[in-house]
Image (cartoon, rainbow, N blue to C red; front, side, top):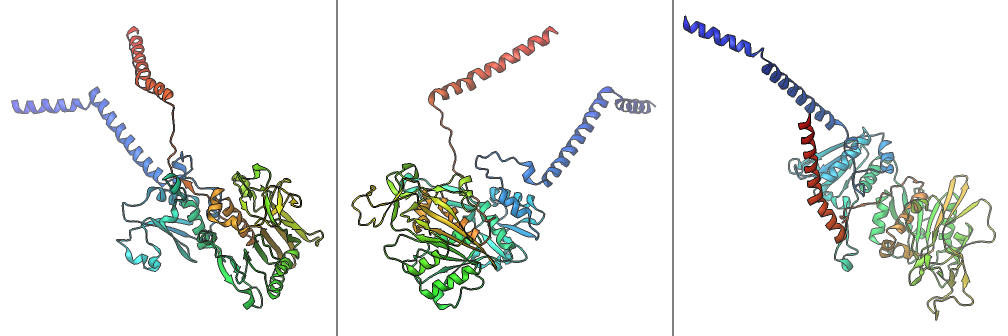
Length: 487
């Protein structure tokens, strides 16, 4: 009997616990905690599905995690699927590259990003043979074609200053490399540029030929003497610093090609001997080469101490405007002048790209000159050292661009102006091929930018952090305590 009464008492106590204020308060807290936890988990899952473009703010000075307008335009206009595959072992993915790939996917539903572990799935890489040699390379693939962007194309190391400074610069060039690759795999037809041979043209430096290929332009050599005409698939002819003249037949074939809407990118050097057949080509488009090498008397328009290393005025044109916007210079060493003929047909539209000042002068034979200063008999400026010509014809539009020194495309000369000469040349080439939306995305430096603070300011900042700030916190606490006691 007593046991039954004890059981009833315990049951009543348990039943009463459910009705106590403490239990109700605790139960409410548990329910709220569970709901909040569920909301946080759901919110995290939802946020993970939102593209990184909208969830992560790029606070880096170089904009490492941001994609430019050209990329947004090209990727946003995709009408076919493109897959970006990061090849790396699980856990070894480069976070910066992966983040960049995710931002590409955020720009278009046609872009898919995936990772591939080469150890687990080696058979999937067999199609690329030896093209993939480094981890964290990216395979870019569409239904038309595929290409591999090597890790060393995503991170570019510049050793040009190592000899002088003992350090080198590492840049993140992923946007340029990936956007170029996407453009390559979706393009219907890649432009073909034929470089003429047989006139003592110098061999093109590797960096320049790689830069041309990087623009998704196919560069082929052409011996025009062995052809009856310029190939029909030629989007442009490149005549790069010929040391000897064209033959009459070659000049005729080039003129026939251009009168049918062809394009010619001409780069010449100062020549002591006349090149009459080449002159026949240029004069057909209202231009002729001037004698001598140009020197600049205005030191604001040449390298200090080198008046023949011209920093010409950049005139407004589709080719040059990107340089002006990027605040880049063009450097033209040992250039000769390009002059308009006194009379040429009215259908030709001739535009200056690069010009010197009025104070420039040209020495007819600089190699035998006794002084580099201006002398009586030296031709006076201003001179044109870069010119563009257009002419509307029945089959389209003829285009010609002429730069008057091949030294502009030497790697060390290009480096002196931060790649401005390369951009100028590639802009001209793409304009020839009617690829005005060419890809010219500059790399982003990964070198740390250190903040240098004078010792006096450093002491003041240290005192504020170590003394003033703690005292301010303590004082605030005292004020709060005093106010509460007075209530």
